[in-house]
Length: 359
Ligand SMILES: Nc1nc2c(ncn2[C@@H]2O[C@H](COP(=O)(O)OP(=O)(O)OP(=O)(O)O)[C@@H](O)[C@H]2O)c(=O)[nH]1
Image (cartoon, rainbow, N blue to C red):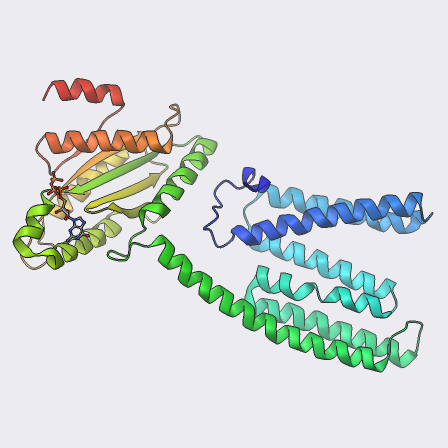
């Protein structure tokens, strides 16, 4: 697990920002290491304390950015802070090197970072402006003939490589993003209903649970099972059964809040994960779902009902994701046993055994 996940437990590996955040932390750590080592060398080996002042100032600035990033979740601002600092360092280096060839090479680390963090459009702008500035600066140095080893040939090659990089990275980042989005959608989606699939629900439940604990909030889940679904298939055929599942998926999406996660748990079972919700609020939602599904034909004249097991991972219990699903499953079993078409919430697995003996 990446060490920075302790600051941002909500960023999963399937979150599109995951690798960007990873890159932001890597650049900050590399810059921190670079400035501290160079600063110490300048003081001890090179007897250049006046330059070390810049190194240590850079170190303090980057440590400040690191502190900001680790405490917040605005990664757009964090990305710009990192890119801005990097550009500042590169341009400072170019000026200090007064147009020598070797400082040109360093500018070429900018495009992959800028395109990856800010996308094909903003990446092209940033890279284009910095490259144009460098081209102008080196051209000036060339004209003045001081004091570097830059030749017209080297300058022309820089312009050509910079232009090629601009187009190639833009093309690469655009196709990478499109492919990523497509893969992302298919890997988290159930192909029949378009809801989240079980894998994605599993990952999200774990993440949401730890983030709820972190914030001292409750979380509830609703495990929903279509009643006597086998009969629907037997009477109307499998294709009609599929359409009923899709209609239920649509009703579920309409019933929940923006922040809730709805997915297909498997076969004719669905799962809703409700962050910041206690079992009372979850029962209100569950009863609304039961009512909405039973009260209207789902496809043509086909009606169906659902049973729902509700479970809460309250802030003062140590239920794991597995534990809360187990409790929801027991609640669902109870709802089925008590005649279906209803929602039941069990407070603990112990109460399940007592309740079962009273049926
Ligand atoms: N059409 C369709 N049917 C499915 C799909 N996945 C599972 N099923 C059917 O769902 C039915 C589930 O049946 P059971 O587990 O016996 O449960 P049930 O008939 O719903 O009865 P209870 O759950 O006890 O109320 C089976 O007939 C499965 O074939 C699917 O993707 N499409």
